[in-house]
Length: 583
Image (tube, rainbow, N blue to C red; front, top):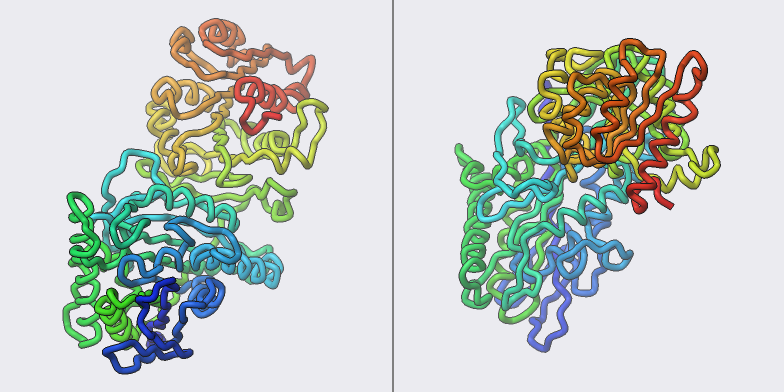
């Protein structure tokens, strides 16, 4: 096997713009910087105080391209606190900026990535498909935390995989299909990041932030082929907390502990670089969480860009020289880029031909990776950033894809005031539809008793995988056995969903339903002896907020198609006027 090509770490330097008479006479040329008390230093690119955000991004954007072809890339900012790292990576004042002038590297990388995906998809004429997933973690006081999790804040485990990669266990991954979806994830994570005010920086980052985009590409020889080649790329976008002179920052108490930990972590990063440069037999990656996360980026298999941020102030000269020496050391390191490729064959696709869906649908199939129940096969549609509508099918084939396809289309496009489809409502309703095959059914492996014996635990696991930022469904929709399981899941886990909609549920004790506070749409077929309508009538009396309907298939076989979606939208609009079905 030929040796992977070596690529040196690309190092750029940016001098922060300051309005101060105490600024040093720093001279910046295209690839050289001259500061007092030092000989000229050469880098791949040097940006003076007047450089724009766009100019800086242009110099690093080539690191994004390899992820589309199954390679790993890393762009990270380094420098003392207050030198402009977070501004360069995200935007001003420690937060995410989306203005053309202030937008940082991370949102610009995202916009560039989706532009390239659109170009590649169009050029391949349907033979290439992409999926992008985002996660956002921070390293705070030596531990990794999930910035996207809605559950109680707790440290995440960092582990080595069998393939030699480093994995962050249980970190939330969000499927993102557009720049706007990524920006929503970034905004949420940036709000949760640890920052504080010190005497050196009003918006000082107290943690190292790592934003990860995984880019999966599937290549087919032709549209009809089931055989594919899968390329999995990864982009790490890293904003390191700044090194800090504690005597100047006046850090005390918790701030002091944070500063010590930040400086210790950066020292360990320096030791790793030194060990790589000197070709030592042992590289101390495992000495810190930060260096473990950056293992592939430093002497590993990623294409890496380091943006060294420095201050021109006289009082910062010592830290500026230290940053530049660190950057020069990094520039001497070479990584070996390795493509991550797999070959496989797709199973029969239940929605072949849906690639040209109307706006808002985008139906596709996937496997949800749940925390405790393995991979669960799912048909999905709509915006992954929208409110989750989880459909739990019964065991019969009649409750499968065709009914689901119709319901999804109607819920996205039906105007409840006119009974007609509306492109306006297609755009207005931000919904994410997930229809699962329960364990042991369809393409989901496992025990068929799972959905019966532990519906709350199982469906909560699915909801967490499908909607990791909220861990709650807007509505559970169940039919037959799936309806009974949805009822039981609400009883076991009352916060799993805001609404419930069911067709022909069976229950041995409807009196239990008086504990359900959510609005519930119930529909029964009087002709269905297997699901007695008498059960539904009793259940409706116990429910706190029922919307109960009966019909006879022998008299009106089209009732479900005409009315189920409409009645559900009306219930949403009545009980949640500001929700997806509201005016």
